[in-house]
Length: 148
Length: 148
Image (cartoon, rainbow over all chains, first blue to last red; front, top):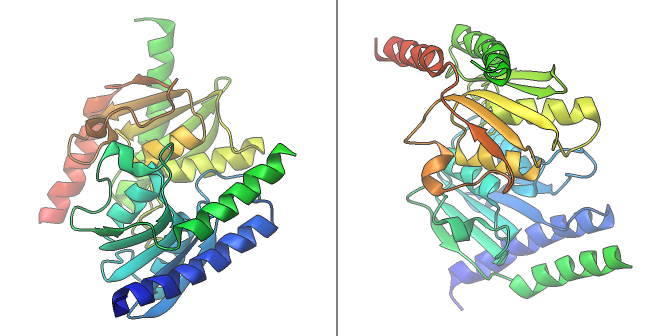
């Protein structure tokens, strides 16, 4: 395993912590962190229920928090880690923020952005499948509870 | 002209007012309103510069405000009016909010959602070209100023 992969695992574990906070609050358990120069500068989890706002996805909240942190709406040198494949909305937000590296866990074939093509920044690198099983397990747990 | 078209013009004029507020604040001049049962329940204009936040598009702010107004994140019975074709991010947000009718003014071939297909809610009706010239004129004015 390369150092880079180890690092991706490390930051994805931070995103998974966020996802677990979402699960504890009965939100769809998706978490995200933004990393700049090996530092986590923003953490967020999905809050669409609590805020009654479809735009309150983990990635959106993390991007806004990261922009506040650096005092710049462009996050070209940042990596976004998110536990599940981003949706169209969030993919579009990363493009506007010029995020050049997006790392996600589980694929989301139904509502993920990928079936619509490359909606991220044209020069963005994408890494998928990082700790995907942990991410999927949280999602399964949430939807199993809902069915009860 | 049908009554429906007259109404669309009327609400688009409200969105254009918002776009003019954006122009006055040196933001890309795009405005949006959300209409429910013939009432404007949310108004917003692009604030990406002021808020240093790429997610602060007129449509996003208007959808969040509309959800706050109705106390529900789903806006299926609402119409979104926006002066310019929504981007991928905003199109995705309207899909999540289940907005069934989207009316916009000027086309935005470069960064509009349409070149990626139908990213709105599957059952959303789209009306384009409403007061498009007024919307385009504001955009031209903004970019002409920027070039000076």
